[in-house]
Length: 116
Image 1 (cartoon, rainbow, N blue to C red):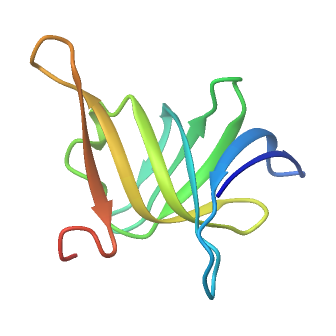
Image 2 (cartoon, rainbow, N blue to C red):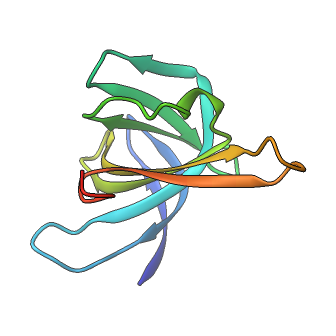
């Protein structure tokens, strides 16, 4: 199910699209452009901010090593949970520009992807 939401809290404000999958812990999917100036990589702790098409910002935390092509990403889709201040991603889908004819490519990283 797709949910469109307006978030207004001290940590984050903006309009977002969430993909909701029922379960013990509801996982959602958020997507946006990568703010490359926000990226902090501490080995197995990656934090960054994504920006919605409307310009709203959402901080994301990923407790795994950064994907090899992460610095080339133009867009990121994060799958995980939101705790009220930060989106905790367990999977990332990274869209990067292709070196072939300007096309973009996507790669998935995280728990349960490719046997990880």
